Length: 329
Image (cartoon, rainbow, N blue to C red; front, side, top):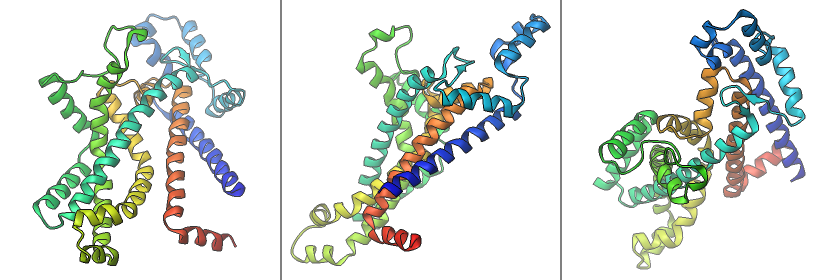
């Protein structure tokens, strides 16, 4: 266990180092001028040359990429993540506020997509070959080919603009003080983005669960249970759900990266103040410190999801652990 933990800690450190380097290089090669992007075209035109040089030096815009990276890395190792140019606030504060909204959105969408996908997969398998099965598969295939941002725009136009059932965006009512925002307000603004994100994530879970459930229904123990007089649903509930639930959960953890990627688009469509929207804002403004911090946090989230999935794979199939032991031996 100690070797397992140390090995994955080393992998995480190397991953975060590579992510930070690549992000810094991409920001440095970007044609976005951080001075112009954060000051504004009109203000920059009326600004003296000395003031422009001063701002460029303050933000490190004229320094080489390697020098900016080493300065940033040295500050991070001392606990200073820098200051966001776009939000004019410490990066750690921006991350703390935005990460909470994103994690809440991802968690709700993750649970909804898992539950709905699992239920649809089991129903499709039990009703295999019927109209219900064909409808579920068609639904999944259509969703798998549907862009997340397009579905978000449709949901926004239908349920927020046309019907007026939900707000058009944000995580709280406009003009309401943060201290006055209730839990109901937060949930009310969360529903539409979370449903949009969860609907897209249903397809993989549903199709995988369907195929696994078909194998379970054709197994000997289900046939024996049905021969004893059990109905199909009763046999699946008593003897099949345990064999179906763990693989579905494992696949769901492996989908954390896809859910996070979808959350970036959903947050942008619904103006939801999370890490995804902050990443877009930082990218457009050349805010390297904030963009690198967001990349590191998101990489850690995805790494954690994949790690849990790998652990569950070993729980499901002990042969995976035995194979790892033989390889290391």
